[in-house]
Length: 104
Image (cartoon, rainbow, N blue to C red; front, top):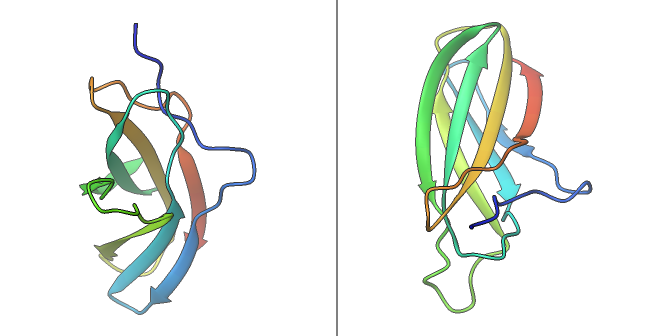
């Protein structure tokens, strides 16, 4: 049985850049006993899913990057939530996402 990837309690998402129409985030790699292959990144405005994007973990690089970036277009100003789930090589996802709430 494959265990889901997880983020440590000290892990956090940061905003790298933000404008009226887009936002770019930086986040740390998840931990897993299996290979973390990618990340499912969701942007929510309230209870509405605005956008979803998959981001490769880039662990095929040597050394693998400790942090990754992801960017989203913003539909307008509002209160948003970013949720990031690690996905391992067996398609098992994190049970608890890494999250960030922000205003744009």
